[in-house]
Figure 1 (cartoon, protein in one colour):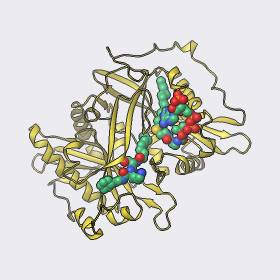
Figure 2 (tube, protein in one colour; figure 1 turned 90 degrees about the vertical axis):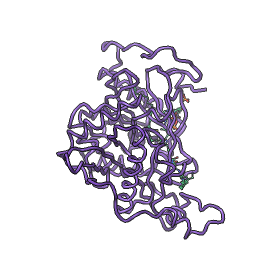
Figure 3 (cartoon, helix red, strand yellow; figure 1 turned 120 degrees about the horizontal axis):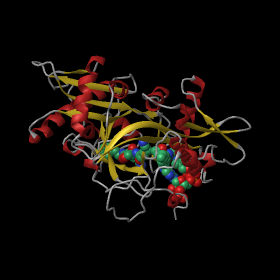
Figure 4 (cartoon, helix red, strand yellow; figure 1 turned 45 degrees about the horizontal axis):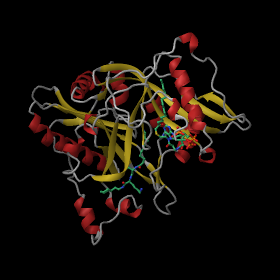
Length: 392
Ligand code: NHW
Ligand code: EN5
């Protein structure tokens, strides 16, 4: 099978790994193809300029109508324009990695793929690489082998920048995941979730009892919890990098600019909170969650579900056995804060130390999974509790 993926430097399914390292050597600059790959004749390549509001809107429209859906095609991700700018313009971003395909005759945007620069650690190896996301082909152009052309083109544009490894995630299984995580969902607005069939009312359960089960306190309870501000950036950077040392596959935040970009609150995009020790005034913990609504496909009343996803966090607790209680308290406060923002569902994956709170805080297993991949890197796979990379 895999007519395309079998030609790429990725491990084969069933392959056993002896030693970590690249699958193929870096291509010397003079041997990298300098012309874009050939598209079917009715299409042309474009580099999107997301600072241009019209082009940002074209991307928003393509994704809102054609991007990822659940397996039963009931919900589709609805990333906002502000969110896309945040996701695609981090420090050091390149316009040339915002790759679009237009119909030559009418200039309609019909496909896209993106890359952003990132630093990660996988086991003991630190890498500066590209994170690939937002691969999308218009519904009317599916199964015409456009995706492999987009992937080869973003690969070529990465090679031209001296980058030969990539990280990406997908719901689908390809050769070959380094880890597989599961989605979990915590109802904040059970009535709406039942009305949209996002969640099913369990047999013989009245709605009133279902609603009661998910009730939360009106206020948070962690002493010293407050919204993160710009002055917190240096301490959050240290907390996060230290906390990440527990895991095998993690982001490395090298500059304060990156932490400012990725963690600081941006309204309706990402919210972040810190815990300040009331005596020492030092930060002990933080957490963040991003806002990613989903369109409810073909519903008469409800057009969107307001969802947030747990993003990066750090817990400072020297006693390993006390982490569970500490983290549960923090995430319970995150649920309360999200509820106050009119969020319908709080989502997370079972990575980081999330298994410590998933059950007790009444998250339920979703029907979606997320597979983690690296391009041109061979390494041992790992359980999701060893993964620290959260992708948007
Ligand atoms: S995952 C979300 C991907 N997007 C969606 O699911 C949106 C809805 N679907 C679509 O738009 C996050 C289309 O169905 C897409 C495929 C475009 C997905 N990743 O054109 P054909 C990301 O963005 C393979 C990789 O006919 P199509 C991560 C498939 O296995 N490959 O299909 C993106 C087959 O190859 P095979 C995928 O349905 C990571 C071939 O595409 C894939 O019209 C990209 C069929 O192509 C997926 N999600 O379009 C890789 N889905 O060998 C980056 C299908 O099996 C690699 N395929 O025959 C690294 C590059 C940088 C390296 C730098 C050194
Ligand atoms: C790359 N950066 O499947 C992203 N979502 O569970 C691309 N299910 O929302 C990769 N089918 O389980 C994305 N409700 C891969 C994920 C694609 C989207 C996806 C799943 C994740 C999802 C919902 C709705 C299912 C609708 C029917 C779901 C059940 C929730 C319930 C709440 C109460 C307790 C039990 C569980």
